Each structure stands twice: as C-alpha cells, then as structure tokens.
Amino acid sequence: MGQTAKATREPHTITVDFQDETTYFQLIANGKAFVEFVLAFILSLGFQLKHQATCSGGGSLTRHSHYARVRLGGLTIWRVQCTTCKAVFTVLPHFVLRYRQMRPEVARDALLATHGGLSLEWCAVICNISPMALYRLVCAFGHHSLVTVLTQSYGAFQRAAAQQEPSYRVRGVLTDGFGSTTKCMRTLFPGARLGICLRHALLKLPKKLVAIASPVRKTLRAQFHTLLYRARQRKSLRVFALGQRLRHFADHVATTAGTTNGARVRRWFQEKKAGWYAVLEDPQMPVTSTLLDQAHNALERKLFAMKGFHHPGDSQQAFLTGLAHLYNLLPYQRRGRHAGHCGVEVEGGSVPTADWMLNLQILTSGGFR
Ligand SMILES: [Zn+2]
Image (cartoon, rainbow, N blue to C red; front, side, top):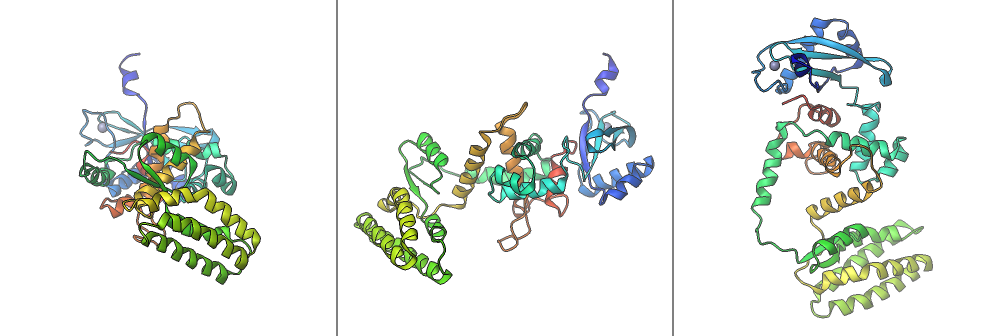
C-alpha cells in the first residue's frame, strides 16, 4: 500500500440531473460531452466539488473509470477525476438512488406519504415496498448532511432557539393523546401538567360519528365546539361543568345519531376527559397545541415506528436526519401558506432545482460542497 492507495480513496458521489434517461445513454458514449455536461450542471447549481484539502479546485475534470450496476440491469456508471488533486467522483444519474435498486419515483411517493403522516407500514401497503426498505431509505438520506446551502436556514432556527430564556422550565404540555408521546413527556418533565389538545378533540369528534347524514354530523360538531368554549369561559366551575356537560352531550348524540354513535362518543370521552380537565383546570395551559408541538408529536410517532426496525449500520441519528431533510425540502401543500415552497425557501435559503426529490438526491449525494 503506497502512494496510489492513498490517492484512490473512497470516491465521492454526486447526483447529476440529465433531464431524461435518453440524454444520459447518449452522453455515456461520448466522454468529452459527458464531462462537459457534468461541469455545466455543477456550474448551474453554484456548488463546488469536494476536492482534496490542498486543491483549489481550479483544475479540470477527466473521465476516470466506469463500472456496471448489476442490480440496476447493468447500468453503466462513470467516475470523473480532478486532474490536479486526483479526487474521484462517482456521477450518479438522477434516475438512480444512491446504493439503492428502488426507482426515485417509487421512493418519491413513499416518502411523500410518510411525510404526510402515514406510518411506514401503510406507506408500504400503498407503494408496494417493504416497511424496512422505506425505513432504510430514510436512513440512507440521513447519512449525508446537506451541503452548506442549507446552513443559512438552520442558522435562523438556531438563533431563534438561543433567544429563549435559559432558565425556562416546562410547566404544562399538550399532546394529541398518543400514548408513546405522553409516556415520554411524563418521564422527561415529571412535574408538568399533561393536557390533551382541545382542537384535536374538535377534529376527532366527526370521526366518531359513523353512518349519519353530514348536516347532523356538522351540527353535533358545532355544539361540541360551543360546549368546550363555554367550559373554557367559566373559570371557577368549569371542570365540574365539563363532566356534566360531556355526559349530557353523549346522551344528545345517542338521541340524534343513534345509540351506537352515542356509546362510541361516551367511551371516547372517558378516555380523553382527564386530559381535557388538565387543560381547563389551569388558566395558564394553552387550549390548543402549537405548530412546534405538532412537529414534536409527528417526530415522536416516527421514533415510535422505528423501534421495530434495525439493520446493520443503522442509527437513530441517521433516521432523524433523514426525516429532517424531508421536512426541510418537501414543499408545502398547494392550499397551504407558502404553497409549493419548501421550508428552506421560506427561511430564505435556495434549493438547486424545482423538484424536491431531485433536490434531496443532489443535496445528500455527498460529493458537493
Ligand atoms: Zn481537485
């Protein structure tokens, strides 16, 4: 093992957008055109390649070697090399995922679904891939930190967090009632009051009312809203009033929407009322959870989901980082605020392309600086 071993260390990977697959297959037949295309792409991103520490990056690229990806049907993958520092970069076309046989389209749908709140298991049912494969995919993206283009956005968050009062203690926590979250909160903040978000209660009620006409369901929801609102208003007696009112409301559901619905709502009240009392007993408790709480809950659910998954070389850190990349890069839905823009853009950062999946591939490919 001499000088050569040192020079040919692990190559960096860069994902390059070749627009469509045909372009890629035409270009791999022509070395000069291939390198020019890759250079033009890097230039268009405004990124630099990860050269050796001593290299200014001013040298040119040359085609270095190629190999076939057997699992991808013998697809030819080229490597390029810096003529100055000899750093090697594997050029991965946009239609291939790093180390994966899965097509980006399949990954895109499954990642979108899991980001939208669907469990890994349900995503797997819908997208026809195994839950484990999806879990490993998220981990794979998490193994690579995004290039510095995102530092700006993370910086803004960091500053906001630093401005918080250092002596801050948690006195009350709102959850949506998810068991795992509640347990964690009890352990982490032993003295804190644990409440259940009243907004979630309003959102949940219509789902408890099965097989009835929509106007009846809407009316019941409005009445339930009024009930919670009034309980909140009457400061001293509101806990007592709530218990009584909930019983009356369940009876009311039974008469207007049938005894089955009435019984279901009554059981649901039994489960949740302690959490609602906790909110109403203390005027300082917020009635609904904040966006930050909701984000924490979503993360907690994902952590809960991952407990069943292990594979060689996995780490909770990688999984969480992978999820964070999704949260930062997936655009807001079309009817939401900032529709079509992702978190990074909203925070003033910029992303390489208009396609979030491609951005995820490019930014986590590892070879860009
Ligand atoms: Zn170099």
